[in-house]
Image (cartoon, rainbow, N blue to C red; front, top):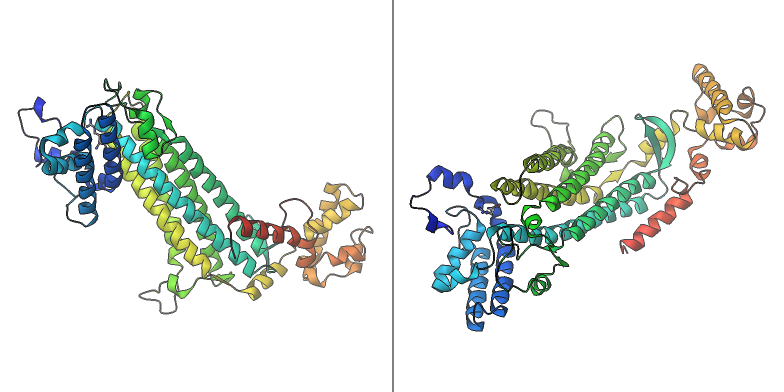
Length: 460
Ligand code: ARG
């Protein structure tokens, strides 16, 4: 066991179980690059403040870089033996530079260091996720372009409601993901604050050029309150909330993919590379990635809740409870990263069954709302029009007539306002073509939206 950063105050060894129970190294080891970066910047500040010489700074920086490459190369075991990654790196530094290492921790505490590292790490991770969201958006837009003319039944209550374009349905997910991307950008912007200089909680007596450090590490601002800086985990909660929302959206897409790949729907088929079979049922081809993505939503919500509860009622400033922020955060980041990647591949390779979609869209009386709106255009009050078409639907069910078989004579049994134009509304193509509002499924609007996204996402 390495020497503790706080050994001076103690005469007794820590209990083994306590060592293990308290160590965050098994999970915060992933912060090592951030911790090294933070150490290098801090060394420059100490030099500028006159606490170490230029040569000493160079030695520290060189040693820290070596430690980084050694960890990169797997030469340092980062799984046990230390309280956390900060202690491990300082200990390694002292092995390389002796007493000099003892100078580096001046003016800082693990309380401000741990949030500095986490902010650095998270900012980078979120930037990566923003890219992954855009890849999934691109896959959805490309799929929409590939099936630009395909119609499908639009649902409410999972009952046939109105015909829509498949591309319109896919673009709905692109919009959701765009809000997700925005939330990550917002969270990133708000977390762009340097906590260094706060030390344990009250700030430091040393002359530390925090603005220089912010510049060196790419932070936009310096924290205005040292107490808040070490106690604040809002940036983690915000990220977890945004990640939970991404999971929620992915689970809705995943749920539809599961539904669409059933024998009953058969709208879509997942590529074999993303399906598995059954050990007992030879005929099975299961949409596992979609089910897993849907299932993982639970842990994303759980992680958010775990951190919210850990923070509740916590007095200022640092408390060891705060160490509980990292595992949920890392788990959510990993889960969302992998889910976005797999969903992108699933969507890229997804095949739609045009026949099944066509068959689906002609069933049910999904032109009913178009007929009602047609009557409104002829001056009939909407609710009256609604009743008239309702009666027509009941009649056609009793007669066993599909909407495509209805004649003008049939229509006029229910209202003399119906004419040849109304009859033309009875195809799904006419139904979508008639839509005129912004954001509707009108083919011209969907086409324009596809082009807008194509440009925005810089697709070929
Ligand atoms: N491992 C700790 C954490 O993740 C680092 C900060 C510890 N600070 C302290 N004073 N014990 O929160």
